[in-house]
Image (tube, rainbow, N blue to C red; front, side, top):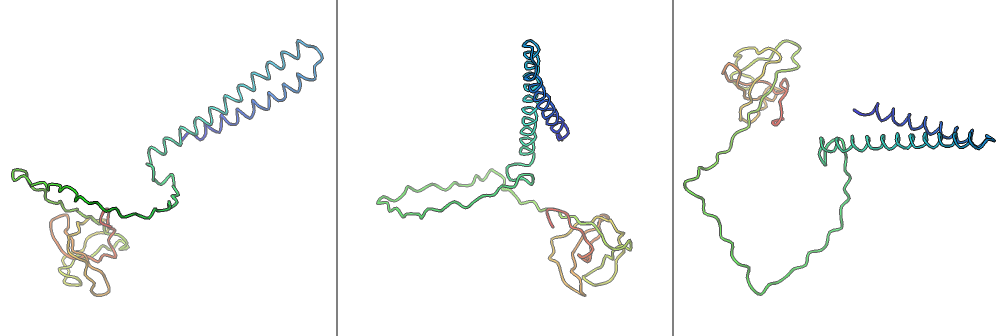
Length: 194
């Protein structure tokens, strides 16, 4: 991020402001006019450089804030927006003497293919078995088919979860093509299915 640059510019602005203050104090204490004018001119230059440092630091802060807003979006995690509820107006009923015109309903074109919904493929990973793996069974709590090692990926089928034997069971398809049931407590289900 730009934080170190912003801190450097701010510290540079403070140092330049202190130097200009010291120069003005020294310039006011001199008795010779030419020396006083030179000291005050240098103090003016350092004061101008102090102002430039501060303006650069503020500009970088604004730039960084704008970039974060572009990345996170208007309601993203970096910027929390508090919205107060606006007072709602009471709707008034309006009666019309003429009925509104009918809007024609579109007729589907028989030549166009009808869209078919695509199913979401849900994946899960076997976790928290202590390295022992998880038993794939023929039914919830049924016969053992095989033991899948921890970290194996499986595809969740669309069957509803079933409770049996103190566990919640999910129907899955193993990477090799076999199907069976696994205990959901040992599955980490990925998004968008979690």
